[in-house]
Image (cartoon, rainbow, N blue to C red; front, side, top):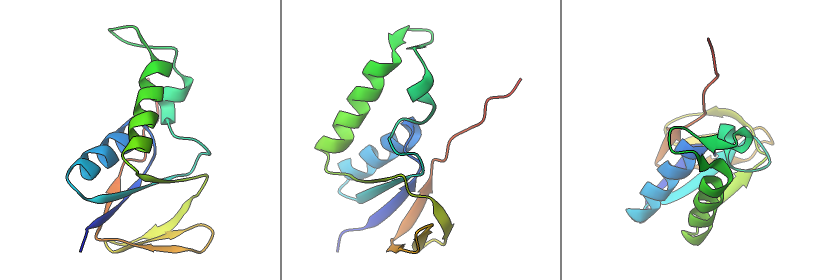
Length: 109
């Protein structure tokens, strides 16, 4: 039976985690509280130090997630979770074999 991992967070770290899992034959489901994937990257113009346009990086990641057949649940919050399930804010419960946390960061001085 195929293993299933819920990846909480749809930013760069969450998408990369889901892609790595999928490449290893593990079913990954991304749960993102915002209505679209990308996290902080959505608000950036270029990446330092390469000055690669952030939009290009984001488009590539989203394309790869789509091509890998990774399920994305966007616009959904998480109420609570255990190592075997994630309860969404809308009351649904997702069963899983593990949870990966990729919930982002807050900028500070």
